[in-house]
Image (spheres, rainbow, N blue to C red):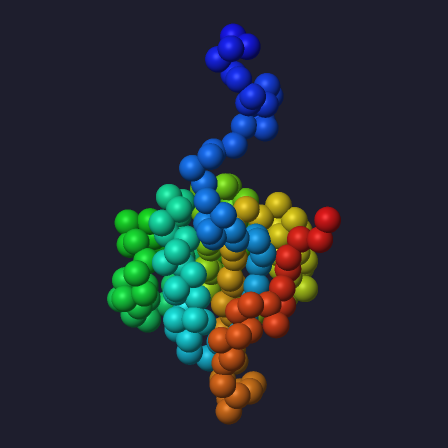
Length: 170
């Protein structure tokens, strides 16, 4: 048995895949929330190249409660593998947040994009707790009220965490 293992570490938890290169995309799991007055179309366009890369990792790109925008065509045009996109239609906000939490922590998703109405303090705290065990990149798109900031354009750079970034701190 010792001859078969050679110089490999003896514990299976220390074995590594030598075929993995340094150029593979390493996603730091985090959950970002942004407000959008375009139903998340601008944010999805900004995130689409990263989603395309993530779709080739063999895990799911999960879209939870997407609005009736042309997200399918948008993702396909960006090169996202549509056979790796999983659509979830939740019946209410509670189920939307639950599905978001489960998709982020399951380990079967590489990215989760969720559309919801405004988050209250309790829901924001829940996302902070989920971020500690998130195993995927998360984006929560909130509907921006028409009366508030009607003239303000959505900044796609806010996806990188300039609004609310619930990244885990250990």
